[in-house]
Image 1 (tube, rainbow, N blue to C red):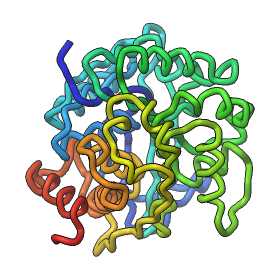
Image 2: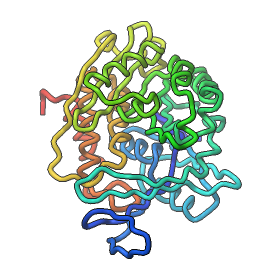
Image 3: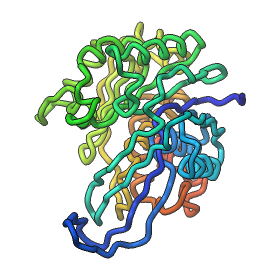
Image 4: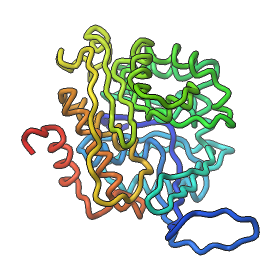
Length: 352
């Protein structure tokens, strides 16, 4: 097993994205013309891992796939990114997860999703040795991690911390009609948050899990609730409103593994908001939240201050949204040097 700064684990799938010239329509018996099909490996470990790699962070990507063509596509897609040590395990009797991504021009995306081999993921295959940070993506799409009020996830996080790594967790929108919609997420958060050093959900992730309606100040309220439940740093993406970052006490950060323990006192009890970076042309919002997570994690790994870290997160999301993700890997028009330069500019906004 190779040594990587970050182990990204959890949800992985293959994204199938038909191209639309106009509105997407569903009409029984009708035939609609669409454009070329984009195909790329997606999910948390692919999106977050890809952006982390482009920001100069060494990454190992761990997840479960089926013994099928989509599983081989997922493995090849991660291999083509470069800078990622691919650690995909075949889950017997499961098909590889996939998403059909519906995104007409200028609109946010809709997903048709099959969880597939992700149903078998319960955290027992995660090996954190030699990693400074372990990031797990999408418990709502990893049913094996949320049973018994998140007991399997708590076991994994405790083990990761015992192995000497900082823990990081991202969520996903909860479909009320799915099995995830029947989870008692309040109890889940009570059990899990004390073991989560960094939490990076979207406002929709949290509000759908907790079944709260949109209102002014909701992000700050939910961030405080997660901090009170024991999280170290909470970064909530709010789309066009940007990113809200909230942190716990100096004592809590000191217990946050090697990454948070190395941060300065300036990180204690912080609440800041970073405005989104203007984008000249939107290519896709699919994976933007994962890119923001990667930008934040890369900044934290380098010991950046809170303002610079939040700026790095929104810059990474903007880079992702404005890029042409038409293939299996990060677009060739954006090199590692360019991606790293964008991070450095966000990290030191006063100097740009």
